[in-house]
Image 1 (cartoon, one colour):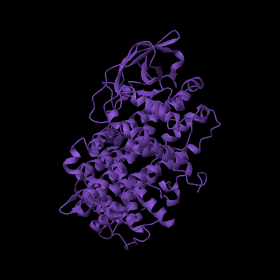
Image 2 (tube, helix red, strand yellow):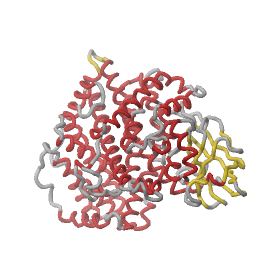
Image 3 (cartoon, helix red, strand yellow):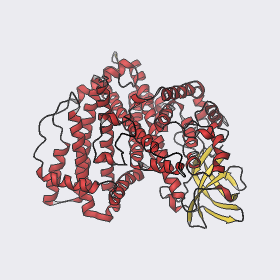
Image 4 (cartoon, one colour):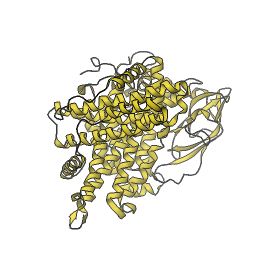
Length: 595
């Protein structure tokens, strides 16, 4: 179905609207062009990066920028740059496949992501014609490497508390301040810097590394991603041309937050690639490693670990590409010939900031789960740096901090939902009110639905939405504007939203595969495991939240409704489901769904 005939989806609308399987983008929908881009990326990583991973980890001088330039020569830095400036300007879904395909590149991925995302996109979407002409062709080829300088020692999550200043002196801006934790700082040719004009107006600037007064500190010694460059950026009376102001004075927060939406989404794609790498690495080792006369894959508890990794990877992958499809649809609605089309494009992406934050939290935490299980499967060898599990474990941890901590992103998810509801663009309050009335009339689950067409899973997802709307509605009614101070409640609601979006995405994909004749016992088993998890997670989070919000008869009534909304219509034999998943996974020798 074309973007023109689909129902227009707004951010968070999945909570109150039904979605048809044919309306979601899935990995099975990639064009030949996208698949070729993914293949080219994987071949580049295998041939040019993987053989040098140890040298990258040792921070060999000049190695990472030289690899970025090589990637630029074959177009791997140009996917988000318009064709007019030497870019490829491919769809977001294709770009995410490229990012996912970088998984085996270790610290190279970090340099690539910082350059192609937050280091380049501010100019793509907010640059003047002159700024684009000067920088985008160089950024697309790797002739110039970009970096993004937002964080300061006293302003991490609270970006608008930045102390860096910018003062106009004739035809030049004079910048003073220090930025922290700047990726690519050791070799970047330009920095996107955020400073306050006259100490007040939060504004973005393009700062060349060669500008007078610009310097960097020493390399940070990090727990993971050791091969990436991370330094402080020091601005001491740094002078740049007046024309290097990016966007509008005082509107830097629009640039910072809109670009972070893309950064969060791309981080999710990289994390999905990491999940698959951890899973493949675990399968390979567990197949070869024998204990008590049989391979590790012959033991049910190891099978269970592999199965859970597979199920959560399937859900994360499904949610990622579903969101990629939403972004592509939003971008397609922008009139590219209209004035300000670039900014309208990034604003269209911003319509799905909720989903971008969901992907960031979901994927980074599932990746952490996967690499932890990978270490466990390797046993003692997983703790030794000679084996791959150790680096995967260290490198994964940064993802819960990057692009806004997961705690901040949980606040963003619920905050944006409430903001959309208050504006009337998302009728969330009406839906929540209806659910509260429904609690009084719910008497049971009704008839047991079929597993053959996933109607049981579809029904559970629908009831899961009622469960989270119940909690959100009760919280909003009690706290009103003060809800923002109840961070525990916001986090519980965010977790319910994330879990529901992930499982619904997996179910929609399974139904779409079934319609295409590609249903398998493995997919059915994955959905069974995810259903069990959704039921347990939502009941636990909802109970915690309601127990804090309500009391007495109100609480008892609400908890009764919560149990009915989240209850499985039929018990699920998750042990057998996990064995089914593991058996097919081991047969394939890698993550391969549908297998």
